[in-house]
Amino acid sequence: MRLLLVEDDSLLAESLAEALEDKGYRVDIASHARKASALMASEAYSIAILDLGLPDASGLDLLERWRREGKCLPVLALTARDSWSDKVAGLRRGADDYLTKPYHEEELLARLHALLRRGRGSMETIMKVNDIWLNEETGQVSRNGEAWQTLTATEFCLLRYMMRHPRRIHSKASLLEQLYALDQDVASPNLVEVYIGRLRRIIGKDRIQTRRGQGYVLPSN
Image (cartoon, rainbow, N blue to C red; front, side):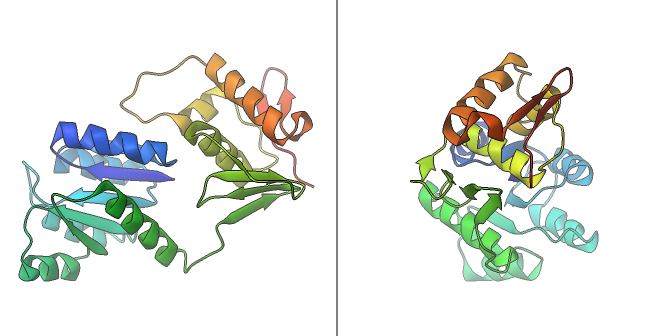
């Protein structure tokens, strides 16, 4: 799940991004409206968190422009202003929800989840490929109806991506692209082998096949 975090407080942004990534989100951070606009134009985000008090532009103006451009992703607005009139203005200009600083991290995560469920029309959160079941809400996997096992955030992101694209051959480079945000250093492709090995131990060695010289594939019947 790719998320755009627009927040000019670098310490807050890094802390929040870490918490979100622990929950399975892939986070891109923008500290200014200009970078946020560039990222929004070039990437496909599932949801955005937007601080309305940006140093180079009004967050509300940025949000309104996104809506005019047809960007319909859910947007959670953050602001230090807590008057009801400010909240009404934010909602009228395109925000889907509104959270006042300071906030509790668990409340923010719950609001994001609610927005995503609303956007899906409360779609089922269970993905299924062959005999593999993945619960996107809890980050757990089950094989052949066996007991659910909890995945790490990285294992979850990797398996969810492969399950969304069964039968596709994924190169190591493409899998790394799914695991790491734009501003982070590129990790060794060998790390993909480590996580593929972990997933094979959980869901079965034959569930993820190696295509020599090409990458990995999750077969689908």
